[in-house]
Amino acid sequence: MEPEGTECRLAAILAADVAGYTRLMDADEEATMAAWWSARKEVIDPRIDEHGGRIVKHAGDTLSHHDI
Image (cartoon, rainbow, N blue to C red):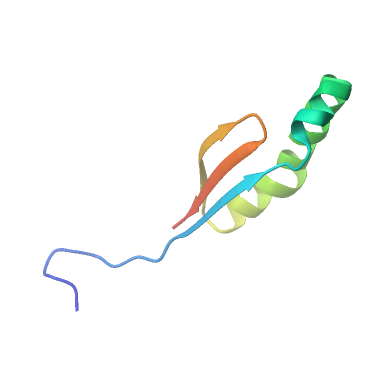
């Protein structure tokens, strides 16, 4: 039982990293960035939206995602 005035919520946290990102960037930065943003737009971001989540941090090939 929660103390009065508090609310219990479930959260799921995802941390992801692209395997081989540095190697891919060294080989073809433009194509790697295009593929990464395509994956974000077509696969990752829609799934986050489906679950009412949000990206709380991203840097290069890494992102942290939080569902409430």
